[in-house]
Image (tube, rainbow, N blue to C red; front, side):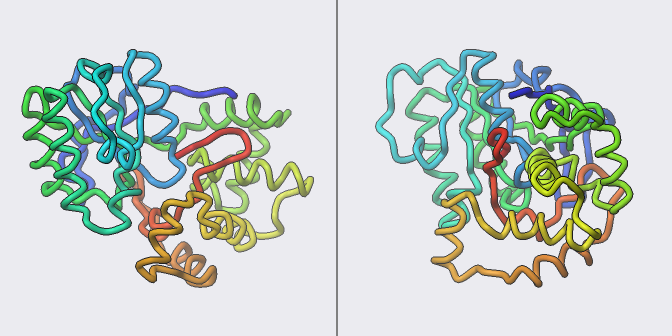
Length: 275
């Protein structure tokens, strides 16, 4: 499976979408930082990026649900920890206690360098930031916002992972149906590429294309989120999801953090896992 380098912005104020850096930078440029949080939409590739970075730097990737409940392993000491899925634990309730548990574990490990991945809508901003800064090796915590795929990335993934002979034509079709905002997300890019491959043609309209995406997201392929939402009674009909997607204003800022899709899951794809 082909993978592409991922870019991110430093964020000063997530709510107001104020970016510290005008240009996005490759994630590898942040390797020297002691601690950072990576925010992004569902399917944006946070987990994939973490696994890549952990492998490239000799760090250790693990899910937060595992980390906060595990007995501390001596071989984790001194390694950069890539802690994935803060939102998966927070969505079950007790968000404050989750951050406290992470902090306690990091203290017991001697405050190693760490990275945390979280869906943008589930990051509590300054509340989470202040607690995590207290266990950062240098008392600093950088917040990063994962960039959507570039057109060059999209063409590469279509060609290498889906065998699309004319990826540029695929992109033009997405623009024709006004769904170009879906193909800059690895998960929904996979979804549409597979749907077109199976059906030998694009969905008949923009609404059908969005419906296809919403059905995939509403399926909650990420079982952790699905179970947690059932417990809390957080369910939505497909019609509600589609209506929210249509009504979401388009933003020129980077990127549009749409709560309607951010609250839904669906991380697995046939060509790889983009979370």
